[in-house]
Image 1 (cartoon, rainbow, N blue to C red):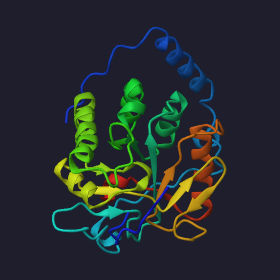
Image 2 (spheres, helix red, strand yellow):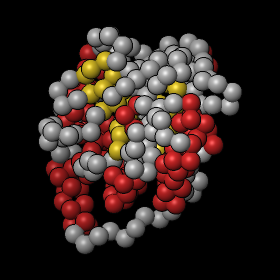
Image 3 (tube, one colour):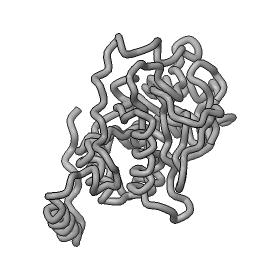
Length: 268
């Protein structure tokens, strides 16, 4: 993954969901029974945490240390990998939509975890009902292109088709046109920003740290999270820990560093 700083130019109504497929109702009932059996256990312990996740403060003008990002050019959306804020929060983001674990939905709901999902149609499309459930428990849904093409260097028409095409897909499925966009692989050029702006995007979101199967890696040489950092939880490409296991491991690190999780959409 490639990242840039936020200051540098390099890098509705919800429609009713589809009918439940055969067998899903039984699975949902089984999960409900499992949750009921665990009712006496604190949710944070159920998800591998040793303490409750601190509630994020309500963002205000006073909590921001400056503009979230400087525009990359006239009428172009800013590129951000962190939010300058005095709040002790970081932001959790997830790409593509390949992993569709129903228990992750339970985790988001029970921990009231604000997460932002950047969806690629060719990956997430067959399972959009899963993301409707995530949205119903508070997750934000955003644009990660139609086909996960590396955009930098492509002509304007091709980049616009990838970005606007996914805007149209998400509008059709969820009744929303996202404001936030993440380019595949974190690579982009000025043409990407022009196309994004023309598709209604108001910010291009990168990351300062990424959570792999076992640990965090940092894009700027730091060895700890800082307030305002945007974190990408990597897709599982190695059949390693589940999405919820990686998220729980990340949450423990966030807690150890005296931080909590904020809602990215509240700050951008």
